[in-house]
Length: 216
Image 1: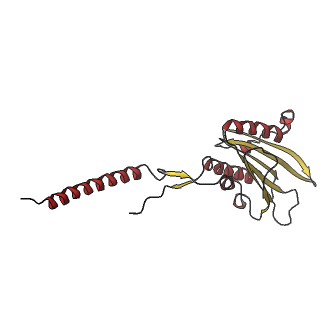
Image 2: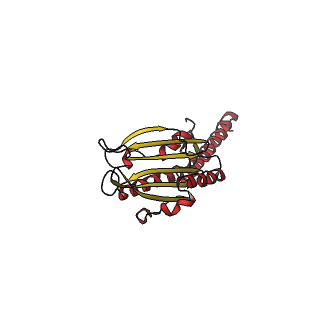
Image 3: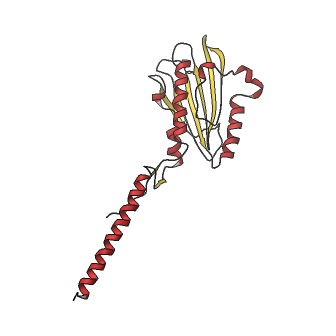
């Protein structure tokens, strides 16, 4: 005759085996959903904006960061800017900079975009800020305007270029002096815009980390 103790251990063993099968099934389902499954956003807004700003690798060799901080040309909940100067020995007007702002809602960013675009390229002067065909590229932006105004500084031909773009809840502006054959050419400026465009697309959503798994 089977003892009560043996019967209890037998049923307990079946229960533990069933629980193990359930746990293995749940883990397999989570793994099949890919690396983003079970992630939670942990990135701070400032760190997110920092990832979207230009850096020295986006510019020709020798450009130097001059300043960074909170911009005055964009309104929003969280904002940053970063400015660069040309290589050592270049005139003081050889510069490029970017401002970036994060708003709590898309409608706020749409308003910020319209305001920034109107400031960067006033409607009454749009004909003086044509969009150069060299700067036509496949952008990820929801809205974008580009204009370059030709001029002369210290007897050097230069185009002052301005860009305003919106990516969801993010709005960015870029300013740069572009030259024919030195410091920052139109081809190099296009490369800068393409690099920033890719960064902006990458920060549409904050980074996250996997939800911790309980220790076995």
